[in-house]
Image 1 (cartoon, one colour):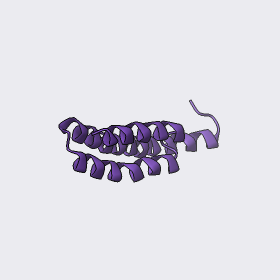
Image 2: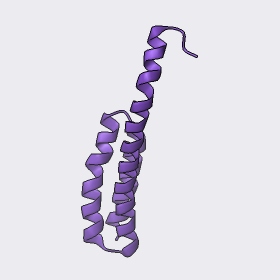
Image 3: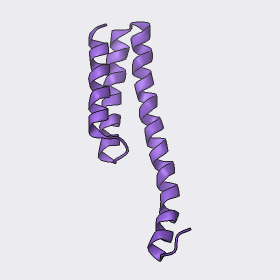
Image 4: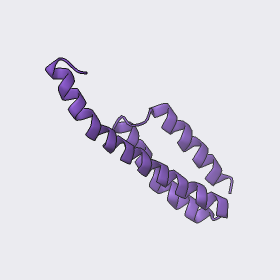
Length: 86
């Protein structure tokens, strides 16, 4: 259990922040799944549009500190390559 006031405040702040970060990660994953689903169907226009929508969301995740920049760079690269190969 936390003893200092600072540690108690951290506990109070961590729960809502964790919920927000979980929602952000879930939102990013949904955008990624839309790109992958469009790639599965073979629809290049839909896949390109989904990728165009997913990229700013992924970048926002990096800016908010939810995801590491190299993780997002790797995922963007792989998705872009997949869309381009259609």
